[in-house]
Image (cartoon, rainbow, N blue to C red):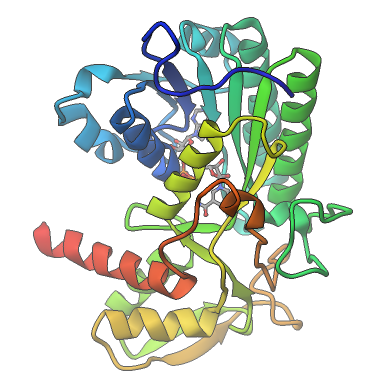
Length: 336
Ligand code: NAD
């Protein structure tokens, strides 16, 4: 993949503009803020199925509000995506159905939202003047990796969830479109990204459960599943690092913290950070081998050497990320 350097200004001082699909979501809105703070203009394109205007409120009411445009639209509508991408120099394709659990999504949803929508965005991208696309992929493309921490070169990639498979298909589409149409693609394999605005995942779920019952915490599976968690600020700094170094280190980057935590450790830490005693764990559902659900990867830790070699490193460990997320959730709640 080739292409130019999407810094906030080109050589003539012209301000660069980014289209962010899923820009009203958790990671998309935080990326929009970072881009605006770095001098970019942003076009947020979102169908608001999961996203919210609240996520964009700070930008919408800030001094640089004129640098953000919000378009309500669906990524499967080619004409609307083409209209949104006009005049953009880079695309951050973050819109997706991000649910890994099958009880919360269906194979058809995953295919439409994560594969078809990606192909539609790529069609609009190839005809546009934009030369860079950043794609939010996932650690789940590795499946049950035999090597931990898992490097980008690991293979064969055998996802064990439909979500992981749909993202791997998205990666292949991004890579092939970029090679064929001579554009630059950046694929980010994200670990579990957490922060106060996240609506999915174990930390916000545990806070909500412990609010209802501080003495008992139901957990899916055996509780020994061990994965890596990265705080949203570290994640966004990693995204920004990759767009400043286009093409230097290939197209795929792992983005995660250096350590991992088990579900039980998270439960204990969430309770402690909320000022509660260690709860009694009730093991709910799950599979005989300790997975929380069919398609749950039990062990996940990414090798982030490649991203570190371009100057990025996470400020928080998984533990620090969980603590900070809980503290920020509590702070927001107190402020209401
Ligand atoms: P999110 O649900 O907060 O954001 C996704 C956004 O996309 C939402 O605002 C939603 O309204 C929008 N959207 C969904 N389908 C759309 C469509 N067809 N057209 C237009 N908008 C649509 O999720 P997130 O956590 O911010 O995830 C962002 C991306 O990162 C996703 O692609 C997800 O798969 C990927 N990812 C997230 C994590 C994580 O831990 N949060 C981990 C790995 C990968």
